[in-house]
Amino acid sequence: MKALFIGGTGTISMAITKQLAEQGHELYLLNRGNRNQMLPANVRTLQTDINDENAVQDLLEDHNFDVVADFIAFEPAQVERDYRLFHGRTKQFIFISSASAYQTPPSDYRITESTPLSNPYWAYSRNKIACEEYLMQKYRDEGFPITIVRPSHTYDERSVPLGVHGKSGSWQVVKRMMEAKPVIIHGDGTSLWTLTHNTDFAKGFIGLMGNIHAIGESVHITSDETVTWNQIYAVIADALGVKLNAVYVSSEFLAACSTDDLRGGLIGDKANSVVFDNAKLKRLVPEFVATVRADQGIKQAVEFILAHPEYQKEDREFDAWCDRVIEALEGAAKFIATESGASA
Image (cartoon, rainbow, N blue to C red; front, side):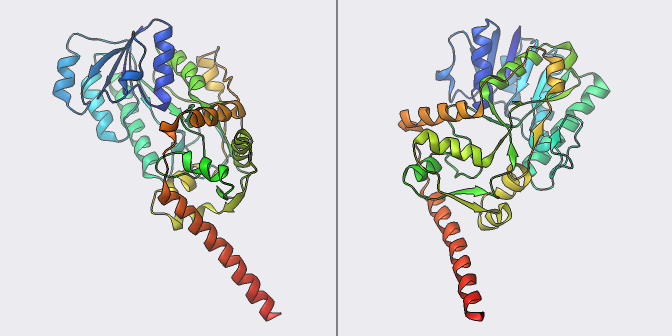
């Protein structure tokens, strides 16, 4: 199979790239070369900016592909560009959308591909929906061979999965735990969540590549395992050998206290309980099974980050923000307790 990935070195795509290389497929990556030093030797690179359409056309002049997949398209203009570049040049075009595009809040905690697409809380998700609609219209009108893939929370060993974290990743929360400082868990920690290791995601994705039954279809790829956020944070603490000191804060309060897009990432995503039904994926890829349990994957991530200082990036701004949020909550509780005592 001859495939082209736009991107190909991110959290989701790197595992697919490695597995395809191990299987001996002819794989090309089109990107700017920022992380290509990590690639297997038999992966070929086309180094350019995907937004420079003339340069891309020149690079692809002698190429046609069985599969083209874009891992870095987030807005309709970008998939419109992809259509211009790849219609007539590939037998299958895979767009990586997002499970956050599903109805939010969900009317049913069980998510299938038939769940409506609607997310009023997050522009990121609405843009993904718009991309899907454009590509499906091209499939219906012109037969453009589209497959839409919706990942949920997919992670690898380089990042510990969290609900609330800073701009530089998971390290600051890990560091707070190691220093016995309180860490913030959104809500009461009991909402249901699904974590998918990127090596498991890759197995499902590769099974869709070149799959004639996947053309014109939308499918999510996730683990079948469901955990609570309390369980996720407890596993992290256990892997660190520390006691978890959790402070529970409503998602609405966190969003109101932050200048970052927590309204989208929390209220439009992680604050909701979701359980994914993977029956459609398993019909299309009968051999698919996710084998990395959440506790195993989380512990691997913790061990990797502790062993690799380059991933221990401090985020003092986020650390101070956590302290301010916790202080505000504690101050409010003390004030109310004092006022209640005075009125009695």
